[in-house]
Image (cartoon, rainbow, N blue to C red; front, side, top):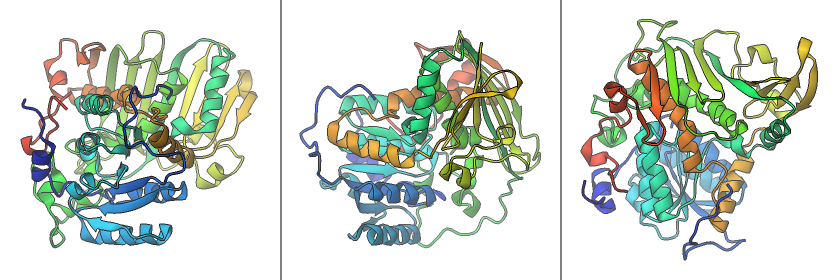
Length: 451
């Protein structure tokens, strides 16, 4: 493919996609625009949905300033732009065209909080425009996209922080330190849970797009389909064209944390999956409401279990997250269990802390936890200034997010067991599975082979 022309690409995707609600190694060269230690970081928000607004407010509290709010939906960008301006006591420009963001010399970095299928494309473009990036999870929609992002980050020497904030949680690093002592014993089984409640999904009336709203640009790289208000308002999570289901939306948090606790071992050598639309058969969703995936890492197996129906399962509550309390682990929807030869560790995400148990359920060690949004956002701003890799850098998250793509591909090809070549980043002897590594994109919106 010919070399990517950013301006030509942006000319095709000028209005882009609105949000749908919506380390340790230093870089070898410090860009000339590196900020001083006390210089304020200027940011732009791309995707003015609920999550984008929350991240933006957090970054303002950490000392950053937003100069642009970009979204296809006029009401959203105006509302969020005003909210951010009021919070920081400084005006925020509201634009629909992301070229305005990439061409603005005063912008140091962007926050990408669009639907999943746009994360990678916008991140690559931001890197080429010389901007650092905070991108919401999952940072890409496919394994190929994720690899292209990591290449762009390295080539353009950008700071890219993925919104898997558990990697910045002090209590999680204390859990990692405890594991490193060897007190748990050898760990050969890790169980990751995403056992949530839920109900059926129905599209209903298609409705009409808001005045001036560019639906084609919202679709971007995804195949064309007629406008539907339910898809735009969060329903995109239920369709493979835009999402990898709740494994990507929520499960990535637990899987990424589990891999961090296991020392970031790289890719699994095999994956298997079972499940489907079992609890809500006949509704309009494409993604599983029951999904069990197993990942073979050679020395240990990680399992991932997902549901979207049992009413009694619950995430760690806000009250628990704010206080020195633990959830009732048996019915905690988003826990991680590490089975050592001597002791068992149970860890909560986004707060909740962790406990270590021996026989009879006796707790021998514990640590309370708090959500890590603020330290994660502060780490991003610090790395913009120092040019160090952030806690959740693109290369590390490429290996974590691979579990999403591998697990969903194993399901989509018929709940098979697939072998994976980690060097080639391809499945062994399965043509259909390999076709899903790089989905078909609409050419005018696609990421090029050479970033």
